[in-house]
Image (cartoon, rainbow, N blue to C red):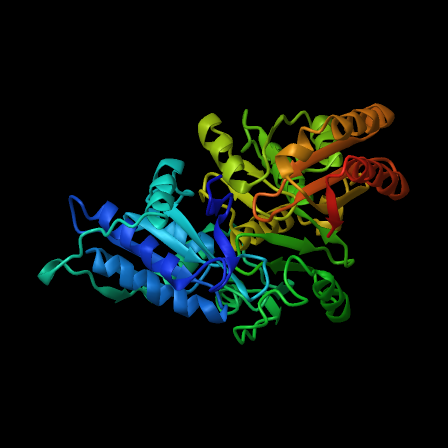
Length: 449
């Protein structure tokens, strides 16, 4: 990770950590970089945050001033930018979003022409320019770029999603929680076109209510909605729709680990999985690994971040991977997590097997898990502190094969994350607190957030 760009872009409070000056300079650098030997084309999408419009204008000004053409998808999802960047031969794509964060945060995600997260080498160049006093040459005359309305690209992405469904959703009552974000219009369009009886909540964005008590990070509202309306299934997205969690017909949450299990099992049964392994991060639940072991399906573990999952899949030819949080990548169809695509793939499992989601997910049992975020004096010093390492080693010995510890730096916030899985909630809580107590005793702890 660099100074500005973490595992999921440059993110922070709008006009405090991430300013319009940053956005303008990012546009200037990308416009100059890609316009050196041809007329560059950059596609831009944004979520529904009030500040997204401001950042869109600043990026466009920077891009066009450097000679690139900026194509605007307007309010759309991160995966749609990824799809259009590769399908329509753009030099790169930009998504303005802070994903599941509150409205006052925002972010700039850079996507290469293959629809993947931007290469580190180019991000390094952007960061160096942000901190420099260098003034890149301005385009002049006919070399100045233009801004193009490209809403048609968003519609083409919707058509692509619809084309991936294997059966009609007729007679299915499906609930959608759009998090007052990127999918507030497009999600219903997709499911209506596929014949579903579609019920939608959190689809009235006002610029301030994105992710507020709704979406994949606050799924309780969708659980109640599914039960109150007797729905067959529900899907919850986050602010930029690269995540999806599900709710079964009984109101139970079906998280990203469950979704990977359900889809991998279905793909194996249909002969579609081949030798592919399921690629997870180190934060996936032990229950997923035990369930995959029982099916004879292999798996690999990466650092936290769908970026690392995607890299592993690409390098090793795996076709499914993701995170417990709902970033699921279906490598035959997309190069990034896609919430709407994930919902369609779960519906494929339901419609083809003719089994409800509760039955499909029942083969996997989640181990209790406790995660606490802690603010410390220095993340690296704390991770390397002998007292802390000794506490982690002791907890691991106490848990044996019936649990595990993950202690890691957050990729998006100035925090350490302490996670323990064990056979009971009480034991998880006890062991997490044991590690945090060691941080406090060593003088490293500031607060538990």
